[in-house]
Length: 179
Image (tube, rainbow, N blue to C red; front, side):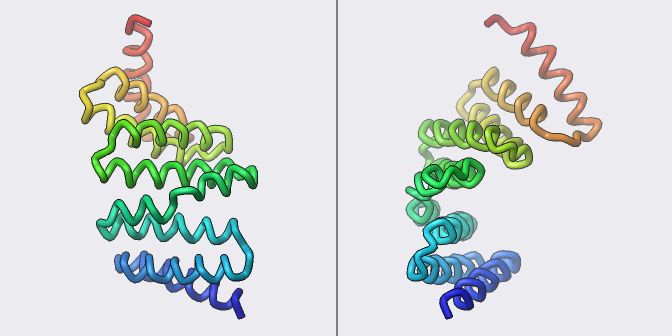
């Protein structure tokens, strides 16, 4: 019965999220998370907590988003799942960014990037580096922003013509910078 509840709640959560009903999605992911915990599936419960975190962030509740996923990175770390550990760290970082805690957010985004790089998840790695770049720009660290954007462009496998030009330009600029 629990597997049916988990699958149904997770699917309804996904559908609500895709429809833009983020609060309902968060509720459904929480229901799936509870069912996973009841079934003893700690990893799937952590996955549902992260799904709930993303929905809560989209719903405009960054504190609840942070609270939802805090600690899940340790569950994934213990399981040796560096990809999902990196995603969990990224979810926590995104919530902290929205809470105005940019320095804490940057620390977690850098940890997230490290885990995603180790896992080979280039797509999410590029997203994290772009986010780091945006935060660095907001803080006035143009060199840090340029460096993070270069890493984002290097992580992507398929670049548009514009992105290839930007990667070339940033790589030249980074070589000209004093070390």
